[in-house]
Length: 261
Ligand SMILES: NC(=O)c1ccc[n+]([C@@H]2O[C@H](COP(=O)([O-])OP(=O)(O)OC[C@H]3O[C@@H](n4cnc5c(N)ncnc54)[C@H](OP(=O)(O)O)[C@@H]3O)[C@@H](O)[C@H]2O)c1
Image (cartoon, rainbow, N blue to C red; front, top):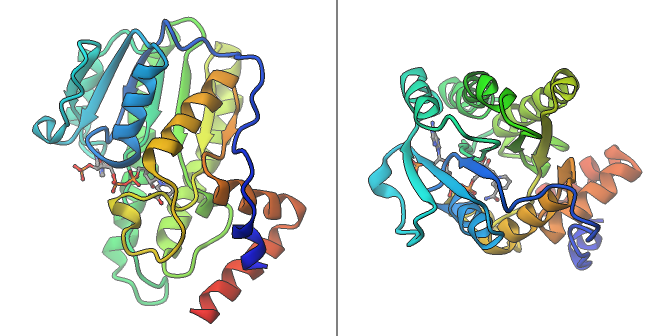
């Protein structure tokens, strides 16, 4: 089962007529200094957006994007004061990309409870606080969108990443709830659900990984298509396909992978 998951290579997001115009967008990306966030800023620029606020805990950790459309902004998504300052500085955002996240490795049965809390604080409560503060801004914009970077591990709990999986399942549920609440106000809510991507976060995962650049390209393509749930790499597409057939099959595949290791 596990081999079957990784042995296919499906084009991640089918190309359809674009339903979200990116050219006149003003985006805000959290965690833009490295990994998927950094690559997403570049992919948005390549797609022709008007402006990107590149959010980072430390602005001096941001790369030189060498593009006048990029505006660095300090934001720690667990710190309400920096969220407030970031929102005050970015009153024209219509595409909020909540990418910042953490992943604590450890078994649920004995990982330090602080690390389980920490993932929930960043991935769930941190993202929720950012969304709450940016909502009044998004409401003033036409066809605004919120994009939450979740993970395929929201659909199946990965052994050794149980706390992270739970925090991201909570974020997926938050996205579903907001989608219902915000649809009448013209704000769409999207999720991005990657499999293993070759970033610092996944450096200890012994799996085939997709580059952050490819994932970011597929994220932006999915957004241009107006996709609600985006699976930006072949592993995510394969695992979601198994989950759709029968979610227990995905659980069995992940469990077999764990016990073979
Ligand atoms: N890599 C994967 O295999 C994978 C798979 C599925 C989903 N994802 C998700 O993709 C997103 C990006 O992860 P990545 O793989 O690019 O990991 P990464 O290279 O570890 O980057 C994580 C980013 O989040 C930022 N961040 C962490 N805590 C923050 C906070 N409290 N406030 C603001 N920014 C914070 C980090 O900033 P600092 O540099 O300041 O720490 C960094 O920019 C995450 O939400 C992750 O869960 C990753």
